[in-house]
Length: 586
Image (tube, rainbow, N blue to C red):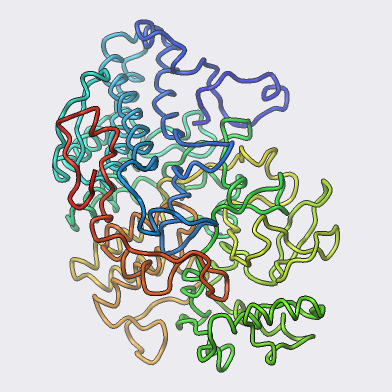
C-alpha cells in the first residue's frame, strides 16, 4: 500500500513512479468534523492511520526511534557513540522513552478515530468500511503490542480522547495482551479481509488475515501460550506466505512484495516517504555520502557458523589469537604494504607488529570470513570484502581496508565517517551504486515488520517449548536451507550441526534469530523477552567495539529493572494516575 499521506508531487508523476499512491492532503490538514465524510476522505483517513507507522522517522539526523535503530541496544548491533541506555546513565526523562510513548499513542488515537467514526460518518461501501475497521484494529493492536513490549502495562484507550481526558491508570501487562489479542481476533474474523494480497495488487501493503495471525501468534508467544502461538503461525502458512528462495536478494526493492513479506512499512523514493537505512547505515562511499551511525557488533559476526555448521573460532583460523591481548590482535586486520608512518601508529596503539605479513596480511584475515554461513556476507561488510559504492557520481567498487587511505574510481578504499575506528558495517538495507536509490534519506525499499522467516522461527520456539523438538528443528531447517547453511540434525553427535535436545534447541533457535534478522529491529525485543539481554550484551568487557574487539565505549548495566522501560517523566507529570515501573527513580 504505497498510500503514504503526502500530496503527490508533479515530479513523482512525471518520473513514472511504479508504486501506488493515494493523492491526499496530510491527515492533520483535514478538519475533524469533515474527516470520513466522503469516500475519498475515508481513504485519506485510513492512510493516516498507516502513516503513524512512520512516526519517528527523521531525515535531518538519526532519531533513534525507528525499528532498525533499536538494534543498537541488541546483541547484534551497536552505534558510533555512547548510549545512555548502554552506559547506565539513562533517566526517566530520556527522550526515547517519551517519544516512543507519544508516537505509539498517536497511532492508537488515529486507529480509535477510524474505528469509531467510519461506521458513523463514512458513505463508503459497507465492504470497504468493514475492511478498514479491521485494518485499524490490527494497527491499534500493533501499537499496543509495541508499548507492552517495553513498558509492560499501559493505559488502554479504545475511544478517541483529548489531552485532558488522558488520565487513565495503567492496565496490567496481561490486560494489554488481552486487548491486543481481542483486536487481532476481530480482525481475523472480518470476512472482507483477504488472507494475503499478491504482489502488484492495488491494495498491497494493507493488513491481511495472514498478518493478523502472525501478530497474534507473537502476542501469544509473549504470554507463553505456546500451543495457541503455534496454531496461529500455521494459519500464516495456510494463508499462502512462504520463504523467498534467495536471502541475499530478498532485501532488494524488486523483491519487497515477495510472498515472504507479510507486513511492511511502505517506502517510496520521494523525500519524506522513504527509508533512512541508507543515510544512517551506509558509509561515505555509499550514494549520498552517508553516516554509518548504526553498525554491526563483532558479537554477531563471530556468531555466524562455519559452512559445515560448526561454531566459528578465531583460534582455528589464527593459532595463538586467543592468547594475544585485544590491542595486539589489531595486527591481523592491517592492510598489506603499510607505510612506515602506519606501522608506527599501529605499534603505538598496541598491535603486535612482529606478526605482521607485509604482503600476506589481507589474505590471512580473509580466511576468517570464508566458508561461513552465507548470511554473514549478505548482511555485513567484512574486512577486505568489496562494496559497490559511488565515486564522483559513478559506480565504484571499493574495499574495506584498515587503515583507510583514500577513495578512488578504481581499487579505492571504503570511506566511512568514523575513519579513526574500524567497524563492521551493514550491507543489508544499504543501497549499492548510483541507481538503487535517488536520495540517501528516502530509500524506496519497504521495511519488513513481519516476514515469514520470523514466523517460522517463532513457530519453532513455540513447538520446542512444548517438547516437540524434532518438529521445531524442521522449522529452523527451512530457514537455514534457504540461507544455504548446514542443516541441523539429531542423529550424529560428532557433527557441529547436532542438536542434543530441548535446551540445546532453545539456544539454537535464539542464535538463528540473531543471525537471520540483523538491522531489522528484532533482536533487542527478543533479548528482553528471553531475559537474556544482561548476559548476552552486558558481559564484562563488552561495549561498542572495533572489529578485533577493542572497546571504544564500554557498556555498564544499570540494573535488572531496565528490562522494562521507564514510564516517561513528562507523562507522570501530565497524568497523576500513572505509576512508575519499579526501580526507576523519577
